[in-house]
Image (cartoon, rainbow, N blue to C red; front, side):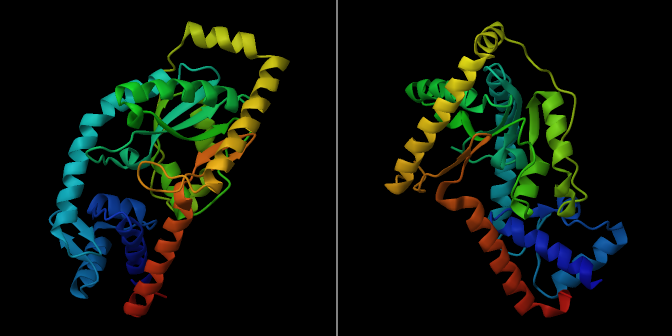
Length: 304
């Protein structure tokens, strides 16, 4: 039973970073172990008896704090209200030139929304046109500031069809891949999920949300793609890549911060662009490893 108990603790440790308690169904799904109903009851009973896991109404957590359960419940309710708008926006973003896949990412993809939270999107583009596509999309985003809608158009992660496999392979990226919610671009998203089957090593029970989705067409999209599907388009893509990279390096060197107070950082190459404010992914992994180390020290009987 030790291995099963450590799997439960590792899962709760990861979500504890976000103060996000899990119901039994999600805890079993994310723990990476095939548990029967009886096995789960026994493992949870042992952990509850040791006071290293706490039951908060229908949720489980490493924190004995009912307020985080209530916060999760309210966040889930808000997410249900935000999802229809997120799908409408995602289908609109798919109409930009050279976009081949759009998915909802971030906290909303985990079925949670803050009162004034962002709507994050994961974007897949045609090979060697990522920077043309991203530039068009971010020029549009500048207009959203006029109406105070910028938080609904957070395109934080771009990949083109040359680089669909995520390079960093860890519990954070595996969780992000597995929880993406497809919006448009079924064929390219299907290839993306196939390229990232490595995520099963961390989350074998979590099924990627692959499904048949509409791919809304756009006359403007087809027009710009026909105009830029040539050497001029390649030259423009290279130019936008160089200019954007230099601009973000200047921001980073100056320690410029976003509205949340985090130092702005954009990781770039010809085939990807990913926002990483204050080295967010690295900080999450560090916090996770520190929590595991603390759990092993405090509850060695539950670890091998």
